[in-house]
Length: 200
Image 1 (spheres, rainbow, N blue to C red):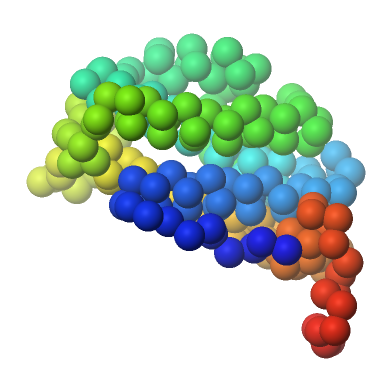
Image 2 (image 1 turned 90 degrees about the vertical axis):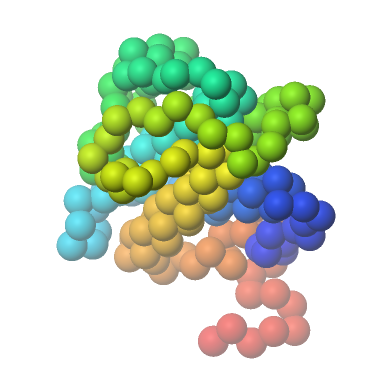
């Protein structure tokens, strides 16, 4: 039941590995849910597992453009185009629901998770330094004296997806009581609770 992130050997390896692991954790919160359950909002917030997965899909997919092409200026139309290629025709903030069932949403997220390795290969092949500055798109959350780098993007993505995986964990526990360790074990075809361990 490999729940923890694998060993890492460098900062770049850590950034890509942690991002992949957190995306996988977010994806696993949908495991075994019906579409109705995945769209449900059982907590006080308006967030659902389906909405968080699609939001995570777009966030990672959009930011990886600049990881792969650090000098490229990315505009709103670029985001729209890359999302449409995935089958997502609108921007979702986590509370909006796409016109997709949960199986379709997870399949699209899987493509984006696979794309993390493409971004890693692009960084390795180009010998990109993580300190490489990238053009900064306008948004109201950026500090005034801010310089964006490939490093910042990768660690921002890992932390944002970790936050949303935590949101999704709480929602999933509210739906049926399943916890992350359990979902990881089930995904690996292992018994839950682990043999010889008392999780009561």
